[in-house]
Amino acid sequence: MKLLETTVMNVGIVGCGYISGIHVHAWRDSGVSVAAACDLNEKAAMQFTKDFKIPSHYTNFSEMLNKEDLSAVSVCVPPRFHTNIAVEALNSGCNVVVEKPFTVNTDEAERLLGTLKKTSSKLTIIHSQLYEHSIFHAMQRVKAGDIGQVVGMDVGILHSPDEIMAADKNHWCHKLPGGRFGENLPHPIYLLQAFLGDLKIKSVLTDKLGSAPWMPFDELRVILEAGENKFGTIHISFNAQGHDRTDVHANIYGTAGTMHAGIYPISSLMVSKPGRGIMHFGNMEQQIKIWGAYIGNILSKGKTPRYYSVSHARIIKSFVESLKGNGKPLVTPENGYENVRVVEEICKLIEEKRVSQK
Image (tube, rainbow, N blue to C red; front, side, top):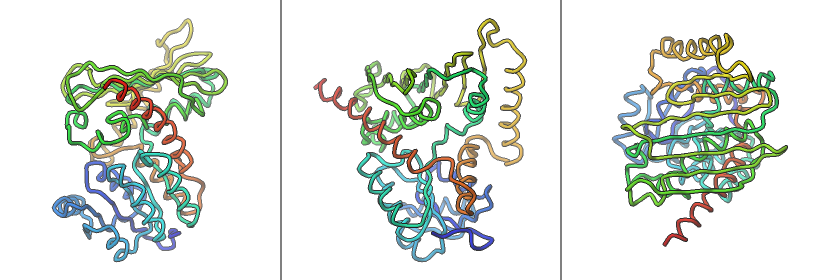
């Protein structure tokens, strides 16, 4: 494994799309040098390295690994390429950051974990919404006992019909198991796993309200059970009103209160207590902290939220610290595997429903 043996750690970016720019900022915030970027589309690679002032660009990943002295790579390509790229990087001695989903199925996840065990390298996965301001603070308040014992959680993801991935019939997401839902599901699953623990699927419900023929379903509801009589639900819709809109939120239920967390587009956190509702000073104080951090990031980084993600920064910073020998990364390979396992089971049930409709 290539640890931080020198004062400068060099990393490479694989894939030059929008999310890759967020990785560049996160690495640099951790004091790491982004030395090269790679994309099959040379024009995209050239433009990306120019925009982000990265010294070198490549169209061949193996060539980048051979020519550059890289300690780590960020894998920011469509999910079907994650495993092969990560395996090659690990075998070359690089550490790896993988965008979610970790892999497209458990077979690939097992192959990747098997390779990882044969090396001394480290790997983490970007479970971004888990470390956004609202959820990050919600986890702290749950640990402090603010709402008592957690007994349930709902996660909602509402998209308008013209959401950029869903509306493009040629987008790679439609080729995933579960289609567009397969790209979305890792987010609510890792949120539920973080607050509830291990999950078992109780029911998967689908519906079709929209008119896009390449999407057999555009409504999804999943009911899951966790240990100690805890339940979680997921609602994903592509029928929200408005243009190019997305809303992500979560409700966390406890024996002494309920939390409502706004995750996207704006972070917010409200606690409702029996007999008090949401009208108490603690909510105002908490919201000031969240919005203060949110605005502070924009001012200090000189970037809009579109180009800077505090969650990516937190995850990658923890990964860099782990490479220095300071603990484990925030998201472990085992977390990634468990996420893939549950998503795979749900997507199989979605596919069974699609086939039965023919």
